[in-house]
Image (cartoon, rainbow, N blue to C red; front, side):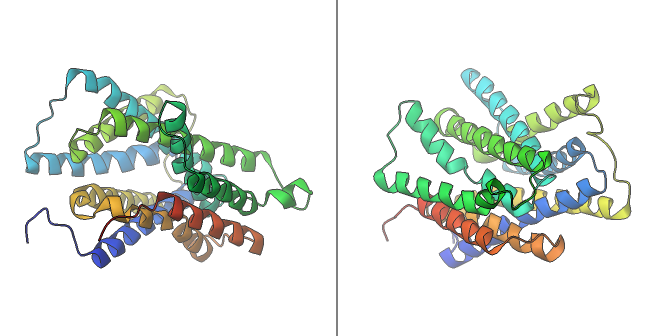
Length: 304
């Protein structure tokens, strides 16, 4: 079988589901690390640094050139900064609200990308897409338990609102990064693009940490569980990210990408199993609507 031949579809789907679960578990580990006083910037610095080393080694093994067209550098730099902001916002959301809810909010990125593309002169969403977007937003209202909170039946503190705000910001920033990648960086090798993106994430996070912009951002864990959680999040993210981009050419992403949207479901399961984070029946129903809507929104029919 040629090296670039796609994996059998059942294997590709299983691998993508496992990678999505690894990304979800990374956020569970992050929550445990943060609960033991691990600095948010330290977590980003460790996971991006280790993954950067793996991808750089892959680049050397592939003997890829690092030369980029002159006009591409500023877009690559901007993409890296956007992903750095997204990483900060996701972890900030995870530290404040249940992991499953944070991931559901962040997974609004496909909707925001479609609206951003339309606003910038692209095609308007089809009627089917518009209906699915509306369905996802309705599901999110129930997943976030908005009706009960408005009725005063649930406790809503500042951290809850901050978590939702960070999640929405992460989704918006990621949508912008996807738009730039699709329109300005699409011609670049995927491994090179990912390596340069992580390089910018690592350097910008290091600068932010050393400058003291976020007090305690580089704080070390204060207990053994925090250290183990930090190690797990680095391992889970590094392996999942490296496998995803290392096997990208063989995963038939155009056809199988919707499988990655099981991440919030995995986050819900792991959050219940490990962190004892539970959702009400109405929230579970809303979460199911959101995940189903995103799956349908990102699904593309392909011949064969």
